[in-house]
Length: 310
Ligand code: CP
Ligand code: NVA
Image (cartoon, protein in one colour):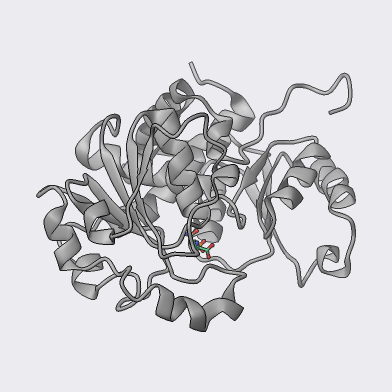
């Protein structure tokens, strides 16, 4: 950052914020959600513009950021690799310098975390991670908020992760360390989490299980994700056979706590990583989880642009 520019905060990984900042964001998300449900106008971001840059596909991230920004009185610019100079090899540093002179906040969905970090390092405005190969912090923000809405504090609870050691898994691990819960993680051999990417201070907040059923035993929340994340499609076939036993089914839910919730960041593939009877069953909160993306991200944008309210 150049001298003289105000201090800016980015949200590039879950561990960029402290536990007390999350407590504040969850409080704000609840207030903002209640206003939305009551059709109460709340427009603190009038004249502010969000640039959204998508190098990978999206439904939820696009709609939640775009609708959320308009609801708060601001406006949105939507860019993709194909329709911008990003797809014609303009350096990410130059894109950051230019875009951040014209807008107030930027959300990026891209491949390597290093690209997002380069953008942030050359941006004059806050940058939010809308998913990278390594992390998906906005999703876990929504997931933890959804857990709290349904069951109260997540501290001391057990979250079972069944599936790929991917961007979602790394972010759950970071959240567990910051918010004081435990992740039971079960991945097929060869698809383990990368602990360097997770970047934890200790190994106290997670346990590794070979058998996905054992990971679910006694869990307060069972969660999974697609077998093949965006960008890894060439591995599709190998993953299909490696992940065959990592399908969250009724048997896995039966060994979790009786009041355990099921979450999935979506999009989901019924019959692959989750059985239809689980995702469409009574323990599933996936639609609340998806909706909450918008409420928590409104709280996040408010915090990054205006700081604490009141
Ligand atoms: N969960 C999630 O980020 O969904 P999209 O890929 O649709 O944005
Ligand atoms: N792990 C998935 C999440 C999609 C929201 C992916 O990166 O494709």
